[in-house]
Image (cartoon, rainbow, N blue to C red; front, side, top):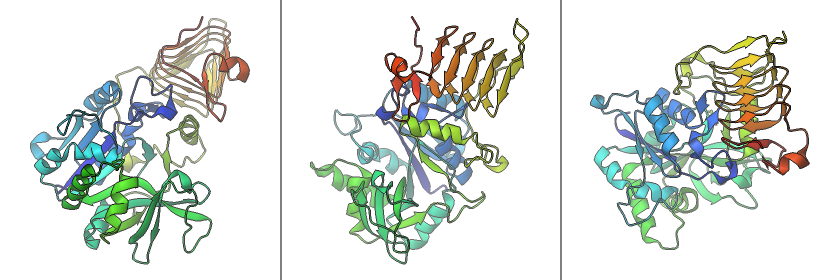
Length: 405
């Protein structure tokens, strides 16, 4: 993979995840108790043999860059390996990144310096497991300018994606970003073929396409809207279906864009299913992250003698459940659940303390929040809406460092 450079797009605002993204970039949002969203993309790179990685950052990137420093300084620069955060350099004018294509266009000098023959472009805000090596191999065998990672989705959901039509050789013959009337697959009228935002480019073709796009003042400088439709006209754009080839891992089937509060919540809850669709325990595909040195999680009895319990939940290091109960929930590090508190169907980030006799249901509580004794969240939508953000699906979100009156 020494002839390949990987670029991870990680600068988006993630406004639909607010308030979780009010103080951090979307890829830095905690997930699954101990991870950050970007860990899944970077782990895929690690296991796929991609070890020259540029992470393009922009929006409120401090916590993301700190996480990359602490958790991903694992490669050897003397062997030409690295994970490097690249904030906007303004090398092509006095402006920030103004689209996915523009973000890379502003860093073409890094592509040239890398001398890479191929560039893998990934998003840093999706939850999935994928070996990119078979896709890269397919790209080389086809002599493609661009290969697009894709998956089958129900046609009623396809308007949320870029949708493509392919011929019998998997060549893409048409592509439309978020169409109102998505085309169906030839052999299945209920499904469409959707882009996953995973691209393999031949470097020369990418540079040429980006330079031409930069000259077009009418362009939105987006891969889906501008770059892919232009390259299709050159007749060297192919699809690679997600899950067809998996290299060293079991069959891939799970991919989630956690771009909304409800999608984020559900993806966390998926981890609690009896057979989770995303297996965090697969020994040959361990999800890497940064984890502080903390004591083990524990349950203990309270001063009243009531025992702390948890059922069907993910409990991270440093958690103490003292006389409270936790069910169907995801708890990050250093969370404390006090006497007779009940937590059900909820996600609690680092350093959340739940006071005595509290009742929490179907909520997300960001870090550094102390929930006063006797508080109820998730039981009265009208009262919760006066204080907090509530998702379309009814999930109550308490922002970071919220102070209860």
